[in-house]
Length: 487
Image (tube, rainbow, N blue to C red; front, side, top):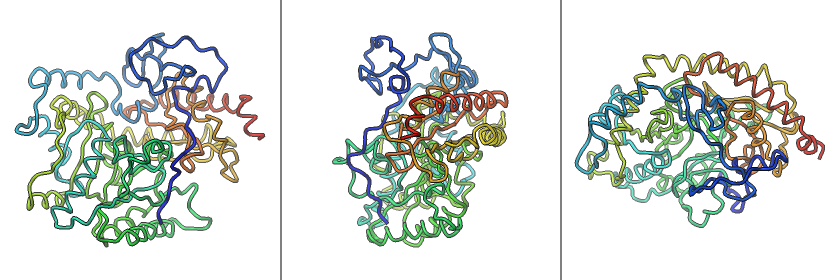
């Protein structure tokens, strides 16, 4: 079943405008800058100025220490300013800072590919290293399309993605994205060859009395119906975030969902592309989030936590059977980028992957993830406006509702997530409020997201939970929220 999105969505509340919306405090004059901030309206508030960071904490220009409970945006996987990574990058920069890949390769990129794929996890055998998640997802789309051209099936041009999803900033990635407030101004430019099916969103979309198995089967049938509508021989790939990211707050599929999806893809020869830019690289307690789903992708994208933000790095991981088709065909993927396989970025990735092993990062993610989840449930789970606390590992979210029994949302005009973000920040903790609004249906609904460094300590988790509890209480006691509750 194809899901059509609003072409002219209601304007979202952007994070940098939060202060004027949440409080009546007089704003200081805007900072003199030549940067184009995410919100440059005169009524907005300048971004806070970060001047340092160490471990799980950021330092602002006024001296405040802020616990980075979102690791930027699930990026700082091993925390900030780890000297081991800094030394590795500096060493690489002194040896070889850059080269173009039309003729050359480098030891750091070669070694990182071997570390990630030497044992061919899930059949993945080759990598392309890029600079951002958007680039990775755009390249994955191109790779999948060319794969079928190489196979002699050029009629395959269509991609299917999901509602409540986000895949990046390029035209292809925005075309895949399922939330209106990231698509609106660009709709006339977006690809006609992308359609969407319903995401796996148990809290809102699983029917009353419907078992997890039945729900998974129904969604797989929706995908099959969409493939048949488009024509089975015209579909390139199904693209999904293994665990949802910022769009709707760490949406976690019911057990068996991806196995059912995999069956449908295999039935019609459709590639399965898993976007793990945010959810992968240990974030959910396993190196790859798909490890918990009982499936493997044909193509996977990773980034963010891959090298912890010490350099710009993402990757496309490719199954051997896909690479084999290129090897038997032209032997060339038509997709070169200036900073592809950047040696310093790869060196940072190698150092971070080594720290994953020596510091037992995955084990810490599992234990601290359970502590975070249990702490949030105990602290705010019974709050009348907390609808659901969900996620996996150190990738968690709280969805808020106006009424728990009906799961109704707050008015679109109330920037609830932004207000919560501000209140918690004022208490010394930074969380992530996604794209402002749209959790429930792409326009309405609010959530906040937690994705702290994977080596966060027990004490730091306690600090986070305490601030979240106090911030929620403060916001829901405010006049503005009380008025919205009574409306």
